[in-house]
Amino acid sequence: MQFDALPATARMPVLFVGHGSPMNAIEDSPYTQAWKTLGERLPRPAAVLCVSAHWMTRGVSLVHVGTQPRTIHDFGGFPPQLYAQQYPAPGAPDFAQAAIDLVRSTELQPDKSWGLDHGAWSVLIRMYPEAKIPVFQLSLDLTRTARAHYDLARELKPLREKGVLILGSGNLVHNLHAMMPGGKTYDWAEQFDISIARAMEQRNFEAVVNAELQRGIGHLAHPTTEHFLPLLYALGPADAADELTWFNASFDLASISMRSCILA
Image (cartoon, rainbow, N blue to C red):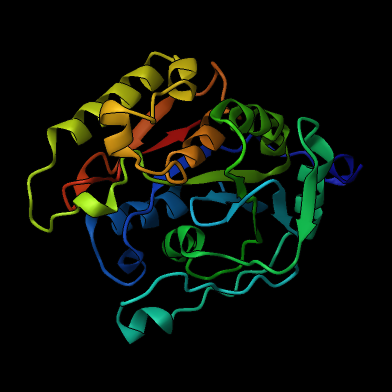
């Protein structure tokens, strides 16, 4: 197995990052300053595995195995400066194959057509602006249950012992239709954000996996699930030995939680 061929390292942290607007790639803010600080203070990874809200598949889970992932500008209506951004990090085919080797709950399929979407590169361009660390992505199969995503994520845990920084990139609350520039954060958004944060602080990851997103405040917080699911890829590889540290625990545009965490 390719996994066995990778050298052992000190155990890497796991991250969940609320990535918010693509404009964070080029605008200076407390959020982007925190990402920069992360890159400076965390142990330097051998590779980054990013599970982003913006690579969605149906009926298949894909792992990018290419050697030079392209920078994907998967958004519209933004300034030319944003579209000019490139993040030419190398791919990580050996690490990607190791992930394929590890997972038994489903068959991960290799992919060479994707690259790095803005859920990945808009954060990494701040954390590791030199774009030297290999990066690969795993898709979100939207036909799978939250439980299935969590179980898959748990199988990726051994990658932490091979120098892989696992990064879930989404948002704890994400309702684009309710966005209100300069507006006060909605009560339902704060309630959902706090309820998930408290469950995580209590190490009640089951409550997060079983969060009700089909009705009530859960559905308001996530009319669609793709920005919630990356959180499970931070929780699955974690265990009782990991200390939970929050950062960027605030809201943008009234309905986007930027709350992020380190598990290490």
